[in-house]
Length: 453
Figure 1 (cartoon, one colour):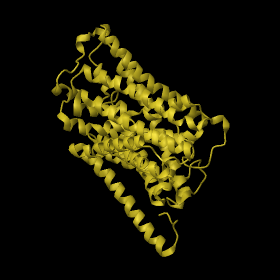
Figure 2: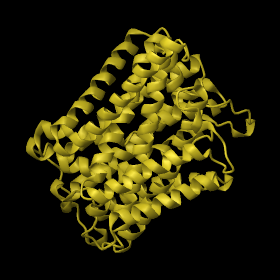
Figure 3: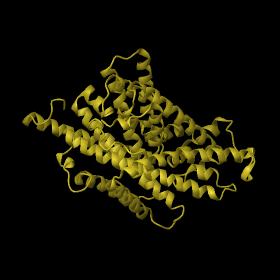
Figure 4: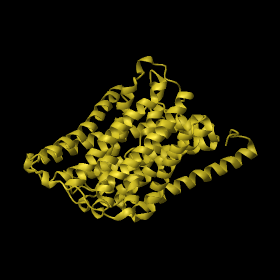
């Protein structure tokens, strides 16, 4: 689903674009499901086995609490900028600056993650083509889509969202048919774990290290906050997000449970979709090809939407004074050229990384992207009691969610591959803090920057 052309920008007065609550729920499902789930979940299964379901349950609970807090703030004070605006109101300009750039970087990492995932999936048909070449092709196509910016693409994005859900439902239906004896299968092929060792393949530490992949699969709920301004009835935002997350969590849990029961956890990896691996031994010659094509189409839609989002948000931040004014400068293209140039530069860096470390690049980027997303979840939870009066139950839920988020963050320290992603996210946070420090120093001397920072 393509984000609004101006994330955090001026109010959309087009009444025809107003959405009913259930329409926003469906859009949210489409925005959230990506190759992080289709491919990244396999990494999570390899780290913890069937207990990956617990990671998804904890991530789903946290996502519901965060989205409820965001929804309540929206009902009280509708803001186009959503979480970024609330963070700024709660803690000052420095927080809005940080939140905006953290989100920008997380979306760029998601674009890089999708780019790498698309390349990995395409090697199913072209195993000898280097990863970086395929990544370059998809990056070029993504930039072309941004440059064209056709209204028709918005309608195609909705079709892509349907394809994502259809791909998961296809797997669930085929897996159930296999259990009933179709395609050479049998109910005896499915292993229901009965011991602790089977459920927790690598112990509690393995489960802990897998948490980030559960959280990453829910990355995108922030988009619900951004799109909430298009609701016909603003008070229905909490219902819309709750229904969306219940639907999404149910789909995730059923499909992950089925996939982890067909083959041993050590057969899952970052090179193939766990769903294709689960059904690889059955008479389903068409499935890997159809499923792979569906995921690639869906993944490309997510990448294109992320590219639109980061380019648009960069322009908005430049107009608000949270980024160099240069990025808001318009040219002959439909997209401000300097904002587009920065987006392209980061994509090029992703391609270079794919060239240097092709074996682990997807896991590194996925971990970093997941961390950057949930850093903003913390911003939302911390802003909540600052901006409105909340109940004791809201406080309890908020603390529970923050504990789960911190567990996911620190769980990345346990795995050497996850540590690289953690390092990348920490480096970027440090860069933001350094920039804030120098801006504040300059503002004190020249009174150039708003007082909030």
